[in-house]
Length: 184
Image 1 (cartoon, rainbow, N blue to C red):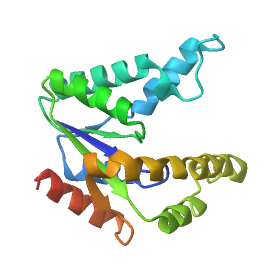
Image 2: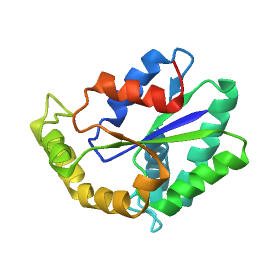
Image 3: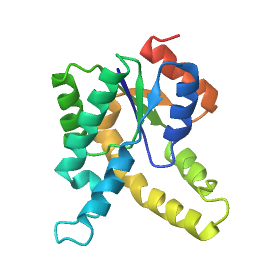
């Protein structure tokens, strides 16, 4: 079983994944972003280089393959994948490939209102030793907020199990996720 945790950049996906992993002792966490880093390094300055690694068909194929293989390796023990997917066709490509491989996918969406997301972004410090690097992350997250809101309104809110995190603590988010997943 794949538990795909989606949501805005800075929306608590990684924290939720870590807490969920603590609750589900047979689970493991995989970070699809790492595949993107490998692709970027492999492609280097080649003219085919893309700004967003999700635009590489290879990224989507490799993510689906990795998740399917990890599902087999864990014998169905939950594989938690915290990753923002905002393009419907990319999400469908990955989830359809997993379904064809016989892998069950639970798509959770951590959602909050825009003001809450903005406040979380402003309060984030991804690199405690570097305000400059942390601000670059905040700039990226601010830039992607409108894209998230468009995806949420056009398809994402209907295609995932939505957890409204606006007024929830991280532990409450995990409790809601476990309820939606019908897991202890």
